[in-house]
Length: 328
Length: 285
Image: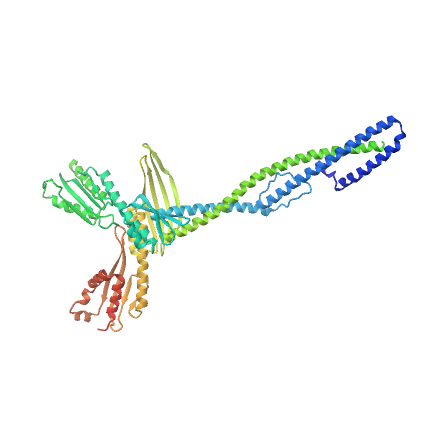
C-alpha cells in the first residue's frame, strides 16, 4: 500500500503540465545545440529517445493505474452498499486505502435477529402444522385452499382407528359439494339438503355419526368372519350398509352343541348396536335339547347389548372354561 | 549528473513505481472481484433466505387461518399438541411386522369445556395393511361439575374411543347451549312465573304461580350420554304441592303430571311442551 502513497493527488497534474513544458524545453535545447559534436548529439539524442519512451510508458501506466483504481473503487463501493442492505459482512475483504466503510454493529445484530426470527417462525410453523394434523383425532380435520375446503372425516370403532372419508366443498354461494368419498349407501343427499346451506358443522357431525356407525358395524362383521369363523356354520350375509346381518352358528354349552340362526337389524343407521335381534332355529335343524330356548334368549340379549365380537368372545370363553373344567 | 540523466533516472523510478502499483492494483482487483463474486453468490443464497422467510411468514399466515377455520368448523379448539415416538417400543418383528408406539398429548376446549388428553397409538404395519390402535387414553376435563360428562369420559377411557369422546362432547355442548338458551328464553318471556334459582346454566327451571303459594313445578332437564356415546336430553317434571292440595286432587292430576309431561314432550317437542306447561299453570282456574 505504501507505493500508492507515492501518487499524491498533485502528481497527475504536475506530470501532465510539467511533462509538456519539459518536452518544449528539450526541443528548444535540441535546436540550440545543433552546432555541437555529432557523438555528443547522438548520445544526447539516444538519451532523449529513452526519456521520451519512458515518458510514454509512464503516461500509459498512469492511465492504467487510474483505470484499476476506478474499477476497484467501484467494486468496493458496490460491496459496501450490498453489505449494508444484506446485513452481511465479508471480513477478509481487502481494504481499499482511503475508502472507509462504517462498521456498524447493528448490522450484525439484525442478521442475528433474522436468524432467530427464522427459528421462531419455523417453530411456530411446526407447531401449527402438528395441531392441524392432530385434528384428525377429533374425527374432523380439513385442508383449506383457495375457494375450496376439503374436510376429512375419520372413523374409529372403539380403539381402532379405521378409514377416513372426505368431502370437498366449493366455497361459493350456494355452498356446493364438489367431490366426496362417502359411500353411496350413506344418505348424503338427504343430510346435505337438510344442513349444507344452514349449518355445515351439523352436516359434518351428522355424516361422522353415520360413517362411524357404518364402520363400526362393518368392523364387527369383519371380526366375526376373521376371528370367530369356527363358530359360523355358513357364510355371513350382510347388506351394503351392514345394517342387516344374518348368519348361522354353532356354540357349545355344557357338553352339548347348539345351532342357531341370527338376524341382526340396525334400524338406526347412526348406531353400531342392533335395534332388532332375532335368534331362531336354523332351517333343517331338529330340536336338540330343552335348554335350547334358554340359550336362544340369552344370545338375543347378548347381541342386543354387546358388540358382535364381544358376544362371540364370551362364547369362546365359555367353551374354554368348559374344557378347563373337564380337564380338572 | 546532467539534467537529462537526472530526468531519466527520475522517470525510470516513476515508471518502476507505477508498474509496482499496477501489479498491486491488479492483485487487489482480483481479490475484490473474487470477493464480489463470492459475495454475489452469498447474497443470492441470503436473498433466498429472505425469500424463504417471507414465504414462511405467508405460510404461517395461511396455517393460522386454516387453524381458525378448523376450530370454527369443528367447534374444537386445540391449543397444544405434542407427539412422542417411543423409540424403546418400536420394534421390527420377524415377519416384516413393524410396530411403532406413539404418545400424544392434546389440550384445548370445546366451548366451556376444556379438555386435556393423553393417549397412545400403536401403529402396526404388515405387508398387507397398516392399522392404528389407541392403546391407552386418559381424559381430564374441566369444569368437573358436569357429572354426565365425567361419567361419560371414564366410559370413553375404558373403550379407548377417542373419536366417540369428541363426537359426544360436541353434541353435549350443543344440547347444553340449547338448554341454556331455552331457559333464558322462558325467563324473559315469563319473568313472573319462571325462576332459575341455580342460574341459566343449571339443569332446573322452576315454574310458579303467584296466586298459588306453595305450588311449584320443577323442570329437570338432564343431558344424557349412552353407552354408544349418543347424547340426548332427558326432561322430567317434579311437582311441589302442599299436602292438603294433594288430598283434594281427586283426579290425581298432580300424581300423573310427570307422565303427562312426558307424552306432551313426545307430541310437541321441548319448547312447545314447556311453553304450554307454563301457560297452563298460570291460567286462572
